[in-house]
Length: 210
Image 1 (spheres, rainbow, N blue to C red):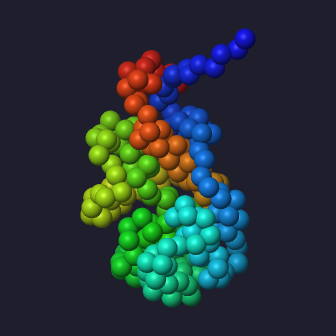
Image 2: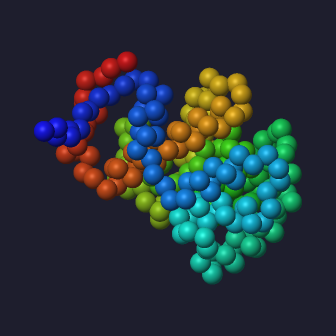
């Protein structure tokens, strides 16, 4: 009778990590994200709303408080969002200023919607996994982190590494797909670290390969 076991291995190749852990990714209503993020035409207000419902993980609607914030700070700027999506340039300083009132996680997701081949998604699972891989403190990465900490992490540590990694790709669609796979891999690892005691499952002291 076959009994399943967990076999641990460590690779020095980042793409090995991405390939392996992205297979364990699971997120509700992923088909909605995939349908809309690849849309070539301009997003309408319903498209934008569905994407934020997907990110929020709440099905087809936002809570009344989140909806009020969404309408005021995001949906009201859909013309600008579509203009930025259609531009060949990425002006981070302008985008930071224009959407400065949007909460950090939603702001980065909005940046991702605007330029999915440039901005990876951010959440606590991704932050936790990244710190773990970098052998930094990861146990205290939760949703209540200060925005300043998240911003510094994303723009000074995480984004530069991801952009350096995707420079291996020259086609925007390839970049976009790979950035999403990185997100999936880090999300899966980060959620694993939160749920399970990693010290009982695996350790960075495993023999390296690759």
